Amino acid sequence: MKIRTLTKTALLTAAALILGYIDSLIPLVPSVPGIKLGLSNLVLLYAVFYMRPVETVILMLLKVGLSSLLFGNAVGALYALAGGVLSTAAMLLLHRIPRVSVIPVSTVGGILHIVGQCAVGCLLISWRPVLFYAPWLLISGTATGLLLGIAARAAFLGIERYERRRGE
Image 1: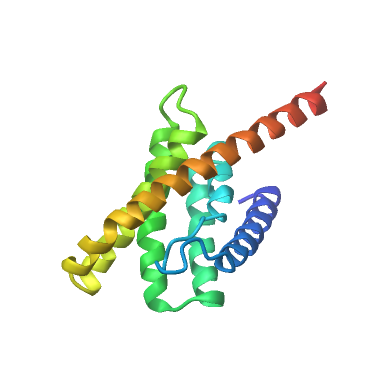
Image 2: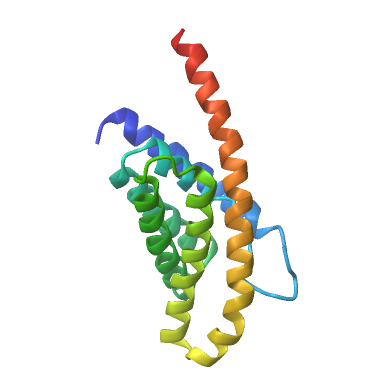
């Protein structure tokens, strides 16, 4: 890995950790635990669209590993890893389809993140409580994925304008 890529990955990892910490301070639905905005996924969306797939996967693994180490626990790491792997793989595959924008990529990522977490829940707990809880999580994953996609689209337009000006 080149020094420039290593530095960029380190900065993006730090940004993801900071956004993840801020996210943990914002209770979306206080009565339903586990529902978050997923602000750190903005960094992963950037990686999906502007970095190579291997760099994106490394960033996701660093984000999950360091977040779990700093702010979570081993069980939470399993949930985060399952959701992260499934959503990142889906986003990378969906991004390869021509003319698919960041909004559907982010929305599918949000949904599949929940699916991955529910799969771990079925393995660790039981399918019955997960089946009861899953609809609420899927609704929130869809909504937050959509919102983050809209935010990322606005940010990407700004990045592209900046790069066009800089290249002139």
